[in-house]
Image (spheres, rainbow, N blue to C red):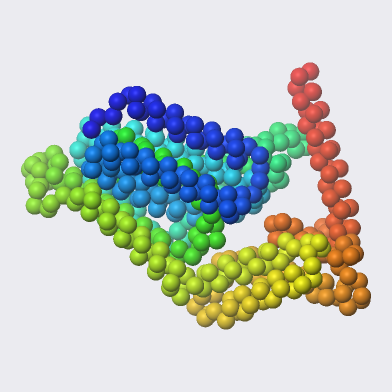
Length: 462
């Protein structure tokens, strides 16, 4: 079925409208999305994608509709793997939680642009060179093998910065300090890049690499460029909300890489079989088509993809390794929640939260030695638990002296929203009164930096 330019134009306008809506109403003002907010908007974007699929099914026919859903499910599964890498990059750059939405939206926008370019190139290659199917199939088979090898090496996602970011930092001046969500700031009278811009560069470079695997995968399911584009775009829209919704679940999908490698290998074989049916290479069957192996239908492909993903998710969640990862995640969550409690919380609430944390810590301590690598990988969990114990002991000490911590806030240790305990420059845990003094000093430095920025701007205008 040929899609008219009008339908293309309307589709692109809708996509741009959804991206603009996401930025204006959710990202422009920095905030941390609640679980309810993330769930509602994730469901909405999935609903939009499914509703679009129904329209394709009604107006384009069963074959076209099946191709769309097969492509959408495959790309959505691959996009979840993208979230693993985004999580590592964001953690590596210590992006403030409230600014992570902006970084993710940039990543999604850049991914749409990068993959649109790859779709155009892929469509042109397929239209003009039938051997392109061999190339795409080889790329997917190589990727599938590499995913398994990297997973066995436990090095599937590499470092957080990447070569390109390190190259940028060598060429251009950069700072390690965030200045809100600004991409540039003034440091020592010079205009420098902030980590916010660097993390966006890292995610953008990663998006390009992911496009090299993603686009051949969907071309293995359909050669309809409109279906390839819409399935890809709708799988990316809503990825930001999904990140916050399944943040704690991502690590539990311990077998996701194996499932994705099976899917990519399957689609790679499907592409090679299709290439044989379209064969024009002289050294294969004398340049004639090979029909000995029947083509794999899109309907069968969809059932295989859904089946593999279902088995992968269930195996991850129900396996001992998945449960061990869940135990570590729970301990991490409870320790952070305890540290986030302020002096306004009642003693009973703090004690109940502490007992809950102890229960999860006991489970972690009781994990078999073979799962110690999971605890080590979640490097911050031990630190958070230690900080929580230290804060709890300090509170008990105050109470033993007869000083009610909820009545004397200046006697309490400070805990921040990100779960860290406030310390002075020497590393000593400090109280609210001491933290206030440090905060005032930091504010004075910020004002001095703003003054330097203003003077720099004035000098440039002069």
